[in-house]
Image (cartoon, one colour):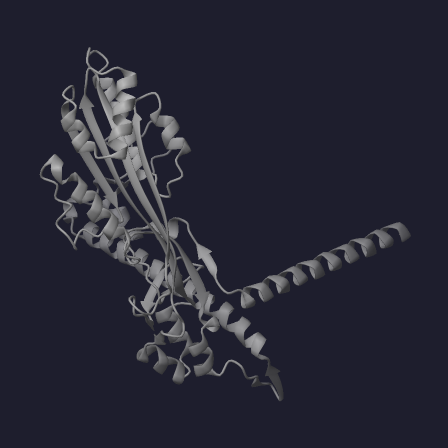
Length: 393
């Protein structure tokens, strides 16, 4: 009995120490959460081209959803001076080295290289039985833009958002503006051109030709070389503003240089490009937000018959935690409303059948069963009668 009692006491102490360790870890994480300046998001949540990340727009880290624009940001004067990284690639490629080029390239948007790789491999398969094979030269240009951040001395919160805070409607504010806002964005632009041609030159002559074309102009070099035939140019661009110039309409080989110049000028705009990452900052770290709700003062709260004082630190922590909780609740509500709408749509479709079809089987859209509804393996859960769906929807 003594051994059992000693073992139970040891087990209790171990659990107590472990719980204290978890509590300490949680508190340390909470402190880091409140004091952190921001969080970088660079995953699939911002890669969706159906949404538009912009500086000053609300964002929820928990759900990955964009919210309304609650900061008035002048993209000409209200942002910091961006920094650019420029890279240029010009080389002769074929079926043997294209894989190495794709794997070794450090471009942030590999889509252009993957498209070129697929085109080169497909062309090589078509020309395996030909005596004269075409050659390909790839020219790629990429600009990465970062440090595109809001200058908080020149931005202001929108009046409607201020009114919500002035009336202490914090839940409504976080529903509209989100728990955090986007303070900075990094973007990338890419332009690629593939020159396909046929020539009787040997490998050394082709290499010399490519070096001359890279140093001068591909079109001029092609014109001066009488052995080149069937020259074609394929161009693709990602994150380019096409609305500012008609120079992207290359109607002849001579206009290729103008297209490259127009692409480079478009890449210099910090507001143009594919979004690669965003910096998300909680609203409690915004100076105007703190001033409006007087976040630098303690708050006296009446709990039962006693008054408890909540420090500014705990107010910040509670606001961050509760704002994300509100965002999650709103996301759950939207998901349930979408599900409810789908169920109502399905029920409307089922009730549209005449009573004579009540005993007919309806198959699921993704069903692999034959039209008769009889599945070979296991029970058939993909086919139900119209009457069954009406009664159970």
